[in-house]
Length: 471
Image 1: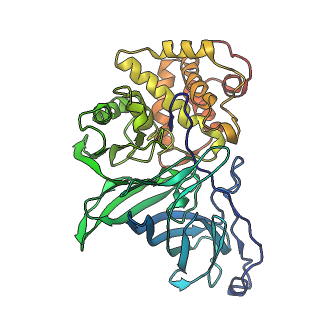
Image 2: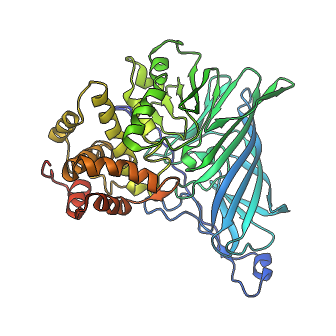
Image 3: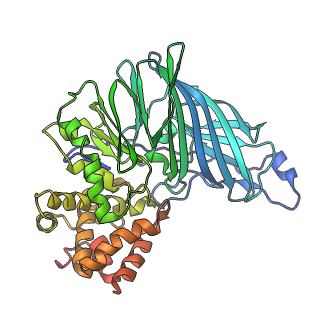
């Protein structure tokens, strides 16, 4: 995510709900030799214990939805393929503000209970560990954002008379489909969205066929690479869509009709391919089959987000003219944050530090400030009491994560030398493509690439509360 300088990021938090721990009768009787139990309420993230859920691993989401802009109503079905990671008597899905009408597990009706923003699903029989299963949820209602007194609102946002935007970090997906809403459980994603004819729909990945029946058009999108749930997006409204190919990949960009076709937002977005080409020289091959971006013209979205294969940019970044720095930031996330995703939110500097440093590399490449000049300026003025290594849940989008995270990357470069550093920039995303990582894994990779013991370095730059020596 790229913050607006001095602005407030609109983000999303979900509150979980525990519920009882008693096993259903059917689960207890399914196999006398197996002790079935409920999946955990929450994925166990130290910062956000109720985010996501336990007991299963999602393989893919396949959404067939219909949105009526006039009524603001969303309804349809979500088909979720998953594998049990324990002997499972019941499991939770995250679903906020929307009501599930029926749930089938492997074709058999399941018992369903809503508990706050949790959907508690009890299948007719227990699911043994290691077994693949399919859950089909029929649901609907009027989606809306979730409010949080600390980080603000986020998720599904109704826009104008014919539009909507689903966007947010660290969570947002649960406001429009049932999901295991934590980045540790990445999954493939398909969307078929029906809207009135003449309304456009943008989402992640590759565009599929469109068809129109009785004044309603179905738009299809698919992301075949595993994706963290907060990176899923849908943007609905009146958009100018540009479709092409760059470097052998579909390139799809979109600008709202409320903005000029040749304005600063459009001109900045048009350089997506050029910026991707440069980043490939730094980070290695682009990790996805599709590329592009979407600009949204909505006052409540004053940030940009690295939604997979198609970042979304608030128009606030282009209010003063062209801005390719924010494009570089979000595209860098395709390597650092999307393809290589977090295992826990504490390590978000791995996303934002490298994306911030990508801005510096792009600036230097285009004749602006050098990476060293940008580092020196930040080093002089930073408040070193803020730490990126363990910022706390209230500060996962604070200055330390972005600015000090970026300085840490540059300091690492100066400490281990350019040869080892740029080798690491390519080997890290290649070695962990489509996976999840921690800071400890990155430190190990940096030590392997450099042949140096870097424990003291990372302790000083990520956790120290005094200014570390300038490398």
